[in-house]
Picture 1 (cartoon, rainbow over the protein chains, first blue to last red):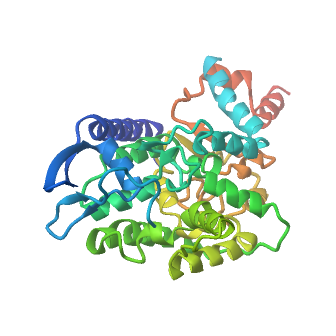
Picture 2 (picture 1 turned 180 degrees about the vertical axis):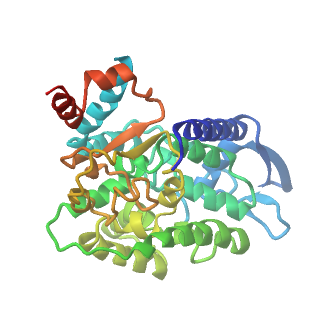
Length: 82
Length: 299
């Protein structure tokens, strides 16, 4: 049985960790995504929120070389392929 | 006195809200079902609601964990959100906020015989979390038939079925989901009539995550042994087969809070934000037994 003081300490640690991790993802974390354009492919940097949106519609995938690749060209798909 | 007021406020609020739980869940539906068409899919919600659903305001955290696992990228936002929300509320989200849990609660209102599950069934959720959400996407990619989104009944019910209906009515070729997804949907649709919240209790990976916070979350279930009369009323009130007086913060608890209806009032929703009871407040609200003892002493 945890004492109230221990609970408060654990809660403070967890909430701080959660907020820091969330803020890092929202404001600082970015990923390089390879996208196909006419005449080849270019690498663009996307923020994590943008990648969350892409992932929610199946807009990105990981190729055999380990690179994150955009699955479409032009307009993004509207729904997840699954 | 102030300390007493703080405690009473939370206890009172909980007992008042208890009768309105369905309405609280309905109110939260307005947040998840995107009535304003915002489509804020750059952020995750803390609930189980498929982002492919045309009526989804936010992205599904489980879908994002799985997709990012397949991409070999750490999902900082989803993990941070789940830690923060879990630390605050734990499984209270499952019982009061989650739309998929609400759907199962509504179906459970249909008077059919309900069967109980073995206690070990609850641990399957962790197998689902580690297997279909983390390991399979990481090692086998998002194309694997056991990738969580490909077997998820929420996705099937909220997206695949409406899509199939719209395709059928429009005279287009129907895009059938894979056989595993259809089988799980079929089993879920049968189970939901005979087991209380089958998805949440057996397979939900999000519930598995939140349940890990039950012992340390800011809001928790408090058992007061002094008030308990051992009447076992809480056993009858709990629809999930938990013995709340033995493990009020059990991993299997969905925090529906039905058990706090017990007559002796031995179970209450507690919070770390409450101030401890002062000596003064204890005198202002003495226990009946203490008063009786005091009178006996005087006489």
